[in-house]
Length: 67
Image (cartoon, rainbow, N blue to C red; front, side):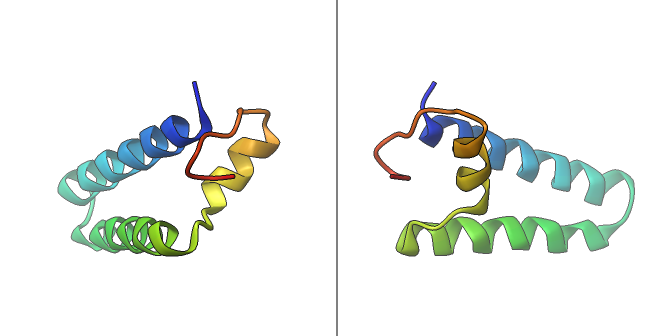
């Protein structure tokens, strides 16, 4: 599995977790969803993604998006 797919899977899981937390725990968890969205948005322009850096250090092979 490439780094691109791992990062996108991780982002999707984080969005689902934050939506569940906002529903079951507190609506303030919507801020976490906004943070995830903003991070994905800036990564699409800059190519910088903290999660990609972490997964790359863990040995996941790089894909075409995060070189």
